[in-house]
Length: 401
Image 1 (cartoon, rainbow, N blue to C red):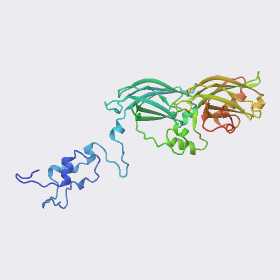
Image 2: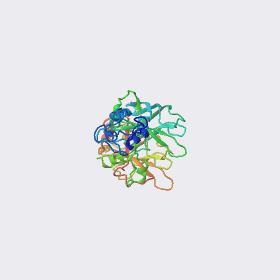
Image 3: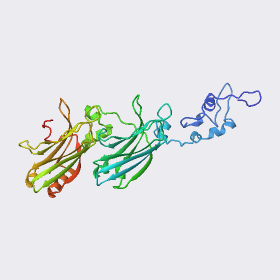
Image 4: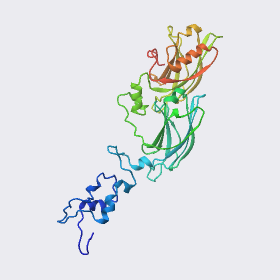
């Protein structure tokens, strides 16, 4: 840098590093005047000084650094995002439809397409697929997954995924988590981005279309204080804390569709075990071998046990079996129907998956189902019920077989 011909102008080392080396600051510099003083006492450099910045440096000195970058200066005390810019702005968008059918208690999720996904492989592409979870709830018990589209950043799925046993109560408090991941056959699959949709945004029998940018969500660490079985089916520590600390909340282990009907002609209760949905996985292969047992409590003679057949390697078994309890309506009003679901294991004790009790001492939908059955004889009433991880009070001493 020269002033007059033959004379070299001294430049401060800070100015040299800021102008000639850095094309622009990565983060806004709060006090730019420290590097480009315009007025005040000169800085001694090699015996010379200057009181003002050279004229050709004035525009750079006066311009805020954020304006040079096209960004806004963060507020004082604001937390700086630790993620890279491409992680927060270029994850891509996901297009999908949601439809809640209240009559059949089903939630239909149509995963359509994604655009502009973040490249995850060395070839600059990705092998994306979509996973669905209902929160709060057991991760493996309600996970649904699309097929994988190879070598693309703009995948098209057009797949319909359906949740069964979704009640009106679920719509009011559950959240659908939609995750887009990259499949990697040589290592662990990589997370690209996710969307969380509160189901209360849906209206019964009205399809809602979504086209939303993916967001980055950092999952919390798995808890170390819970058992291995719970750790295997938990999604986030936050959901488990809600289960453990919330009053009256238990971990969900799936759903069961029951049919109750009191026959005035046969003078007895007809219990139909229709099907289960999204059961918790109890085996290492990610499935269970479920069967259902029913008891009518109190059971002094221990003759009220009924048991379905075992359905192999499934989390959504269909039983379509019926059991009959010979009992007068007045006596039945004092009874409690106990329904438990178990995982069959050869050579060892069977694993408890979940259970529900229906009777005068039950709560919510379980009590209402029982009451409606007694008040509407000769009418078959089908209702979905949530299976919880806690055994009903009388089930702890039951044999597992």
